[in-house]
Length: 413
View (cartoon, helix red, strand yellow):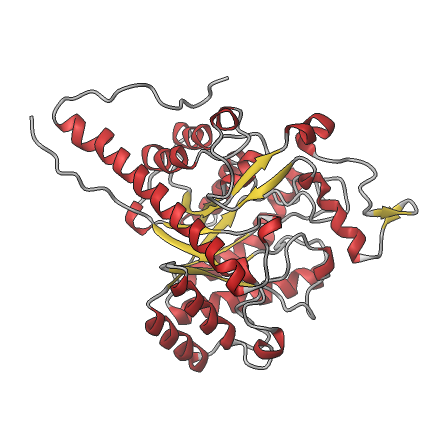
């Protein structure tokens, strides 16, 4: 019997720059795009965030989805209307050094399987610029969606993935990059009735996609950037989801985390179920999808009638909701990640994503204490989970001392 020292391992805490889209006004950042990155790095230091996930997006003048139709405002902190070159990289790297803040990865969340060849090419060309930027900045990963071809079945989309997405992964591989997929089903992305508008929404499809990647020689390029809010939206709980990945031998797939919760409204579920509002949303007018982008945003009632995004730390502690999978049990989330996933914990990113509607404040001074508190909460929860894990799985077992109680268990019903 030996004595194991107490050595908890903590994750890297950061924030997605979409948390405050208008930190730098467009009148300033449009002519001087890297100013937005510099000012966000300065803001991150004020928030006590060690990293930013740098948000990229097609400029509002270039996107195929009007900003008015989006649930969340467009966040292109990284403006790539012109390519990111070595001069731009030097300027950003100087700011990284000045503010002692790192970049976890670059996030570009768009539909990479769009059925229209011209629109798809535009998105892929932009993604290539994102890859080049990541390479120039020495960033190891890009985070985004896979998307869905709306004209095809889900099975046909596996072929679309093989034809259109695998080439992107080959480009990522040539640059030493990993592509981390956030698993949001994007239910309101279109005015159609599909709930799953992104095929990489759950472990079943992650595994199917990864098998395609393995055959194409890019298995190491596809990883998941897990966001528990989307699991809650689909009736899943984190511990069971992680357990399923372990049981199937795919618990290496998750490579990073968005820290964003979901608070399910029991009344909304009673009215519409977990598929959300199916009729009379307001996104259709005169028997067809409305041409007005302000009407199209109502497609998101497939999600918003039954739940609301949580900024970590802002929702009440609710053990019953945890047991019903109606909000995120953050402590068990971080504990389960350590117990069930194959992670290099000290090099895994926890990125706070802010989409809590009443707190989507486009005013730096008002938003600052809210984000600062959420980031601090996230850090302390992870530290608490790290301490529990070290005690439960290292310190006590080394001395033959049993751990008390049972804790949350996977697949309970």
